[in-house]
Length: 119
Image (cartoon, rainbow, N blue to C red; front, top):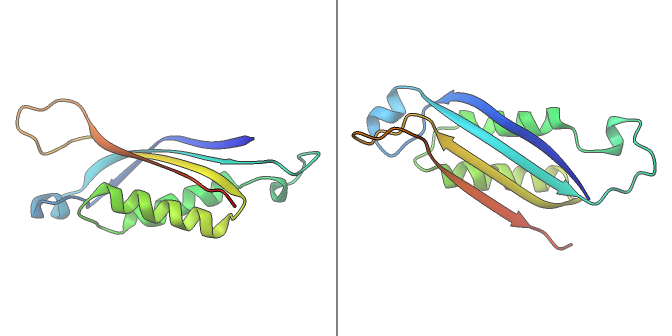
């Protein structure tokens, strides 16, 4: 089993339930793990694995689409990755809002979604 990881990606986007959140950019941190059973005997080409560049682009594109809740972004990223890479057996993604609009709150809030696929 191989897991490709993208950790602590930072995006500035317009997601949130409140109108003000959708007007003013907020910062988000995304971490992604994509696992699959390797079939290559030797890893010499990008075709022998899953491209972390392509994974980043999938995350980047979904993060650009404003949504009310982070779960929708997670779901969209998972579906896009599985569609592009059918060999994937498990995907785990976490998205954190770094400045949540909660009075007297210091920290971050977020969602983690994990899906396993049995093909």
